Image (cartoon, rainbow, N blue to C red; front, side, top):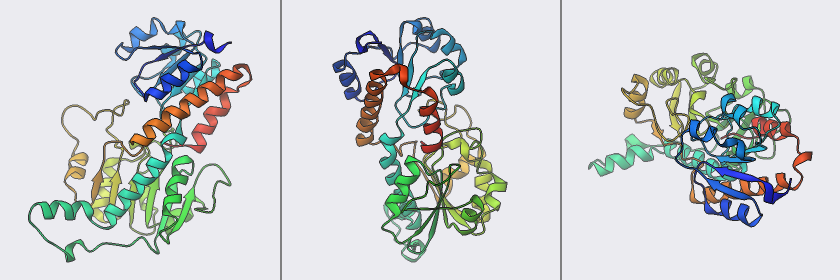
Length: 336
């Protein structure tokens, strides 16, 4: 299939370089940022590729109507909004861009950790309200601590690299063997839970990581620890997190993602706030951000560039690309 024969539907806005480079490469590009999923389904058979973020779920119903679809490109790290197994079974190539925002996520995780250790959010708010409390805001140093990372793909490796100048011991756990490097020693989950002072999550959403951090998981840590989550909100059971915060088992948490996020990652729930969330809003040892760890001006461009490069590479020899390889690489070597 020639590049000029490939029609791509963009259903979310992205950095303009993505459109520009695909146009220059000869692809036919069209946008539809407003139609509902049902409306897009009525015309998706006319397209060979679709570029999305997270506006709606690409499920079996959608894919059954996409009879000519060759690839789905998500401008982000995760693919959980896509029925990946069914797409692969239908010969559809899946493209994600975990490389594009890995640096941003690593920096954000480090910033959250330093802010928690040094009470930056608390002290800032106190000073603005006229309070000057030095002793009450005495902090902790990273030096000598052990940081445990679960999920050692693009995001985990980025965070470990950022930690390399802080004289900490970094341990990583991953379902793939032999992923450790100069910045982190790969260990078993039991070893990580025995030694860690800090736990940072860098896992994609999978059935195995869903509600992974629950009461039983937390209780297996030998020491009280700080928690950083820049991965997926559904990986942490918020009720159990709050219980651990109240007991002191978890010393504090930096949460860029929440269990209550909607699929689009653009909004939270509607209606009355859960009690556990109300606790997080009031707790001084909690730092919250709205799913922006990978959301920088630089990553906006890097994500688009990564997707453009992968689509162009795919088009060079579409028939020789194995759909399974990209999906598996995503699942085990990347995270959001």
